[in-house]
Image 1 (cartoon, rainbow, N blue to C red):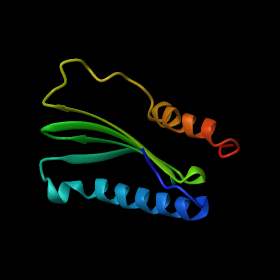
Image 2 (image 1 turned 135 degrees about the vertical axis):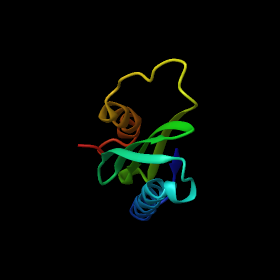
Image 3 (image 1 turned 45 degrees about the horizontal axis):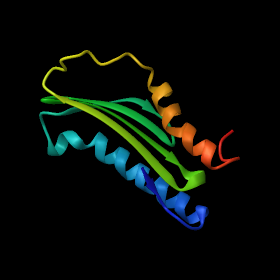
Image 4 (image 1 turned 180 degrees about the vertical axis):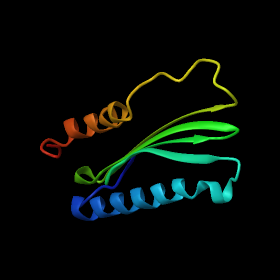
Length: 111
């Protein structure tokens, strides 16, 4: 979790910019790591989920909560086939769970 203190107008812009840069880097990760293959599974203006397949399997979730100048990220990975299958959880449920504490902490920041 990254949080920019101070004026939320400026911090929100920074959070949105960092989010955009992170999403672009994820989409381009195969250029620097040809054995890895990214697949964006949820693509929203301030929320993203992706699976990167290859020697390392990674599920990543990223949320930009511009109202609180915050970015939250959760990444799970396994080198080689996971010994226990990944649980089937909708991307939106994980993204909502990342956002919920921010909505609670910053009253009136979420619809």
